[in-house]
Each structure stands twice: as C-alpha cells, then as structure tokens.
Image 1 (cartoon, one colour):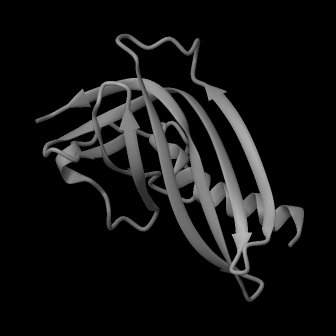
Image 2 (cartoon, helix red, strand yellow):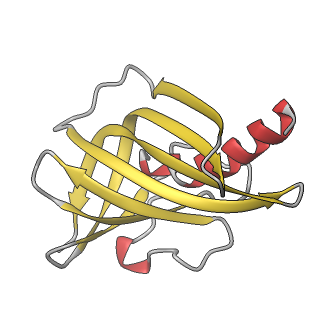
Length: 149
C-alpha cells in the first residue's frame, strides 16, 4: 500500500473517529446516518460511558468536531475537545499490521474549563486495492462534556 493511500485511509478514519476527541448541534439529533459519520465507545474519568458519534460534515472535515454522546445509563450529551491523543493501527484480515501512527493535537492553549478526560475506541473497515483493512483507533481526549439529560 502506498504511503499516500495509507494517509488517505488514516485521514478517513481520523476525520470520523478522532473527531470524538472532538457545530453546536443538538446531541439528541445524533448524526449516526450521515454520510461522513463515525462512531465508537468512550469511558470518562467522571464515570460516564457510552457511545459517541461525530460527523465532519464532509470528508475533509476537522478533527475538532463536537461528539454527540449517548450515555450507557440513558441520556445524551456533547463533548467539545481541547486535547486529542490517539493511536491508529491498520491491519489486514490475516492480522498483519500495515502501519501504526500516533499523534497528539492541542486546540488553542489546551485549557478547558472543567475538563473531562475520556478514553475512546473505534473501528472501521475499508477495502483498498482489493484488500480489506481494519483500522482501529484508541486514545484519550480531554475537553468539556455537557450532559443534556
């Protein structure tokens, strides 16, 4: 797989999944069926956990998008990121690691009023060059969590 193809694939996943680490849409209108939506799971140090969905709005969106949250115990919320630290790995169907990349990004000065730290994970599959690749993302995001109920 060419470096360009790898970066395009990482970009596609990162636009979505890293976006958690993320627009002030209503969380109740979570964009799970939007063409560029991605989702995964989260667990925060506050004890909150559940699933997240982010929508970049287009394929070249920013990773700073707000995440729409559905809490395990019920209710919804949003997460606005200030620091994103993730690792993305691509593997073949036989388990061969194609590449792994890690990054940390800080928005502004990285300070968030009443910060929350959450671990995230997401997975996506793409076929490229006739080969199925599984992209897994894991990491930590820090930002503002706003619960709507």
